Length: 160
Image 1: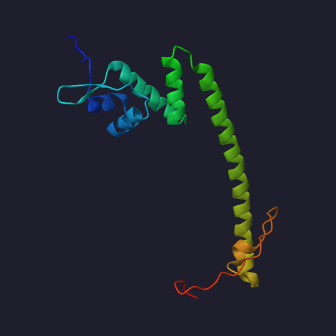
Image 2: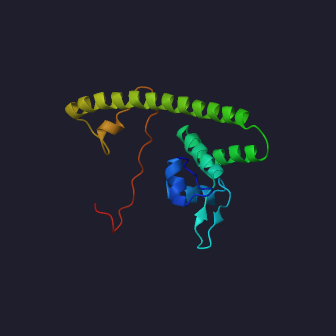
Image 3: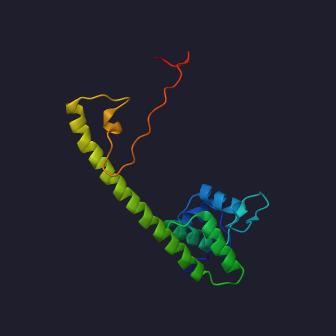
């Protein structure tokens, strides 16, 4: 028995086939990632098999960390007759560089937090003066010194 696929799909069918949501499809339409769909006489949007392939492409591109604007640029290049693969390589390289930078910053932050946590136990035991909280005010190795706090005026709305 041969199954005949419909030529057009409702938004719910398209969302299910492309493993996305109706809301995502509306967003993609509003951002111009999908062409304006045809409509039934009752006003329901109809999507083609090609539209579903674009939805799948968008889902896959998003899983690679690409932003909708970048995905739109890729689709525009392809729709204009260009091969967007070189552009995609540049985007992926830029995303990888950003991830490496973020990982470095996170490693540095982890070290600073560990130092602060070790110092917290010592500061709690050693007493000493603090303006707000000695755990945070204790300088960490390699950290810039804190600037002195300027007293804030007491207002009627703020408790003393």
